[in-house]
Image 1 (cartoon, chains in turn green, brown):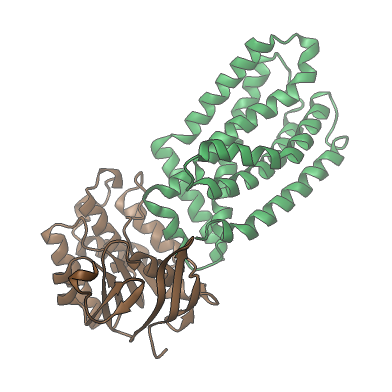
Image 2 (tube, each protein chain N blue to C red):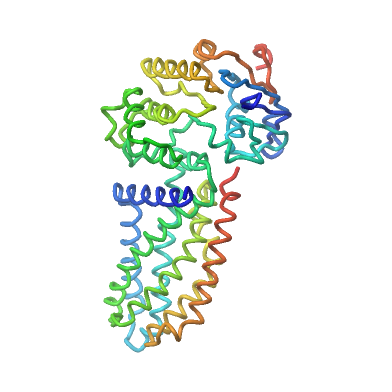
Length: 225
Length: 222
């Protein structure tokens, strides 16, 4: 129960802070729109190419905006050394990781919910029928990405070159998630069902589990001095 | 109850090859108010951070509230409070929201009553709904103290608690420290304010060259 309380209180605090300063969500959304504009005008996609390009472009948009939000996640805790106060709370420090992860996941999924219709608009895709299976893939892919991202956000929060190091550390590790998510998205956008993409979804589920457990267990050592 | 509230044996800490603590042996009785003096860079804050389980020592052992900091850090954390250099406050939250978050995270009962009383004691009741971003350094320090007032620990660590406080704030802090003394709370305070430290503490020790002394170092020792 104490662990759940920590996760809930951290999530509620992060949402309240975000509602007050609107820094992370607004920046992520604005950046997503800019990326979609750039993709649209630089690739000038014809309808035939769109189906092939769409899954990769969609996940690039998800990941670039996600990196922006994840990178700020522990910087907020570094201000006034708030992280130290969290570390003084009795209980498993892995719960702090889970609390921050749930907040990051909520922000990323909220932005992705807005990116999907914008993406359909920019690339003239009819995603209505594929929306539900697409959301399943988005949740699974984003969970793995956010788990590794939250851990590395904590790891790099104290470093001077964190803006450079954070994506450099994060992207190579999430390659399996990217491959699984992009391929599953391609199947869904190609008119396939979740059943047809089940192999890739299982792979995503497996990576999510591995990343979650590893990040939970190693968080204590990451924040330790 | 443990014989010693704080107990260290040959505690060492190195940053790379640079030794900061070189075998610190310290025993603090339950209910005792110990004041630690020392020049800048002597390792005072490092010692507090190790005892609060925020940092691992390079060698030696330490027990706080009878629990080993390496083997039982969770119980140590449940027994202590810290007023440190930083405010540990979220700038975009109000005083009440910061207090509420801190107290609920620690699983304290009667949060609303406690925080209202603590904000009144620290003279922050008028600013309780203001965001911390608008607070002065002294007000932030008062809010740090309010968190401890709302949930007094068995052992309180204070790292330069007088910095940023005006005269009224210093009076309020000294009054609070005296109430802790009467409540048998063990206090470990690091300060440069020799006058305040000697006036409030039961015993003073000096950290110099990585070791503790009972007498202040001579001027020639720097």
